[in-house]
Amino acid sequence: MPPLSRRALLATMAAGAAGTSAGCSGWIDEPPANTNAPPELANRTVFAADGVTLPRVESLDSTADPSSADIAVYPADANVDSITDSLQAETVTAVVGADAQAALMEACVADGRSYGFARNSWGPETSVVAATPSGDRIDTHLFVGVNLPDDLLWAPDDALVTTGPECTLRQKSLDNSERFTEDIQPVSISRIRSVNDVGGFDRWDRVPATRHAGGAGYVVDITGSMFADPASKHASNYRSDQIRLVTHADGQVESASLGTGGVPAEDLRTDDRSKHSDGVVEQTVTPESDAARQSFTACQRAAITSEPIEEQFSYTTNGRFRWRKPGLFDDDLWHHHTPGRAVWYPRW
Image 1: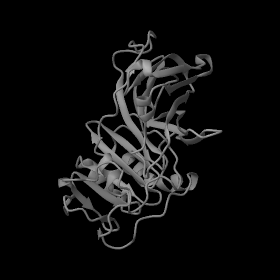
Image 2: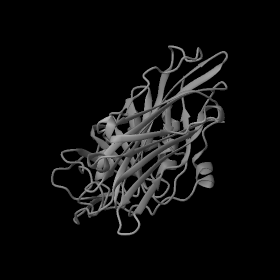
Image 3: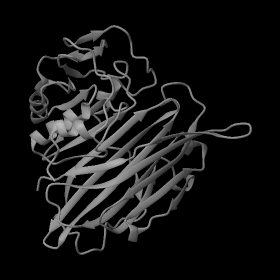
Image 4: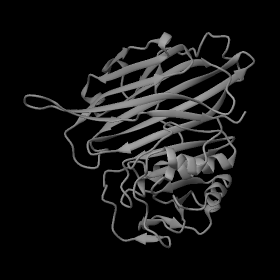
């Protein structure tokens, strides 16, 4: 099935969050409310298209040329050709406002390189997305729960991150299936990032694929990290409590492996409830030390064989993050799930 047009995407996906203010690009003097957020474009050069208003930061430089910027920021209703030109100039490109993901998807189609999205749908909580040109592919970033314009500095700044957290798989070998050959190639990397009221999380999906006369195969690499306060927007007594990574594949799961990172392996308890015959990979990591309850990482690798891949392939996945606050009688739990259909478009 070919990639959907922007009109079709808008017709089938949920509406996005409220857009940025209309009119010319500019600055606002109010400082961002999220003082615990990641670094905010310090010492970066930024192109802000008409319709984008950024909070004023002394160490941030502006430019009128997106090709000379560290990052270019466009409103969701910008001309898609402008967004595509920014990608083809090899500039990290962010889109903000309602239906930002639809605009970025259309620009990725027009660019012509391999790309993918860890979640092919969006809602009001996804109002900032970004794309990073990387050779013959485009990597994507989805920011969840971003408040505009207060968070419109840390989210684009975070899009300049090109590598995720370190995580060591317990099983190093990829797969024993003859369908996985040496010509397997990266398709794209797609990320879902959020800072919420109790902590934050960072999910990275990396997908290489191969195809041959007898079918095709791809590898789903998912890494999830979670953080407790002070990564959250406000002071919090919640602690990191669990990461559950679940993948439902249409093809045959040939192998699956679980890994951990951020803290010593003995500080984490793992549970694997995968059912390869049903195409399900479900793995859970739970912290068992104070250091791990502050922050830890879990990763999953699944090798999947499928029918021949032409223009796209997909699977259903969910990274489930849980925080816990001890109570006198009952503990209070805070959940953030990232469900959706991950879709990838290789350009062979």
